[in-house]
Amino acid sequence: VKRHAVGDTIYVTWDGVFGHQRNQPNRFQIQFQQTTGNVTIAFQSMALDASDTLVGFAAGGGSNASGGRDLSVAVPATFRTAANEGNSPLLTSTLPRLGQTVTLTTTFAAGVSFGLQLLGVQALDPGVPLDAIGLTGCRQHSSAEVMASLLPVGGTATYALAVPANGALLGAEVSAQSAAYMPEANLFGFGMSRGMRLTVGL
Figure 1 (spheres, helix red, strand yellow):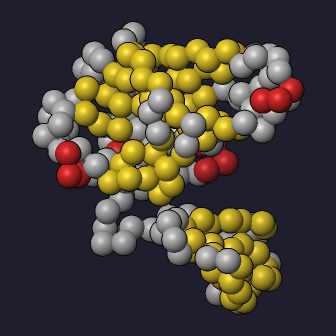
Figure 2 (tube, one colour; figure 1 turned 60 degrees about the horizontal axis):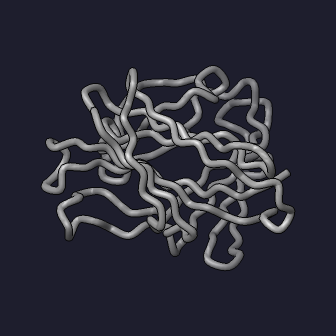
C-alpha cells in the first residue's frame, strides 16, 4: 500500500494487494482532494475471487443504505447515495460539440411543476453554500448569467443550447445547474441539482 501527494490531492494506492485468504491481487486507489473534500475511489483491476467491494462511505451515516449494487449492471443508469438528494433534481447532458445542439435534461421528483435552468461562464467548485438565504443543504455550482424556466412533462424537462460551428469556441466551458420548485424542501422553497461543467469539443 503506497501513499503520495500531488498538489492538494493525497493518493493511497493498493498496488497488487491480496484479500484475506485470496489468490489474486487487487489494484485500486483512493484519492482525497483536500481543498474540496471530494473523495474518489478508482479501480484498475479487482480480483475475480474477491468478496464484496466497498465503493462509498458515509461519514456520520449521511448516505442511504440501499443495499448491495452491481455497478457493472447499474451503470450507466443513475442512482443516489446521499440521503438529502432523494428529491433533488438530477441534471444530465449530451456532449457539447461544435456545430451541434447540447440537450440538458433535468429529471424532477414527483409533483414538481416548475423548475429553472441556470447557465454560467464560471463553475463554482465545491459550490457556494446557500443556507443563509433559506436553501438549506443546497450549494450553487454555477454562475447564473442565463436563467430559463423549465416546465416538466412526465417528470422531465429539457433545455437546448446550440453550439456554433466556430473553431474559436473549442475548449470553451459553460457551467450548468438545475433548480426545482419544492415548497417543502426548505424556507426558500427550491431544491438544487449538482453542478455540471460542459467543455466544447469536436
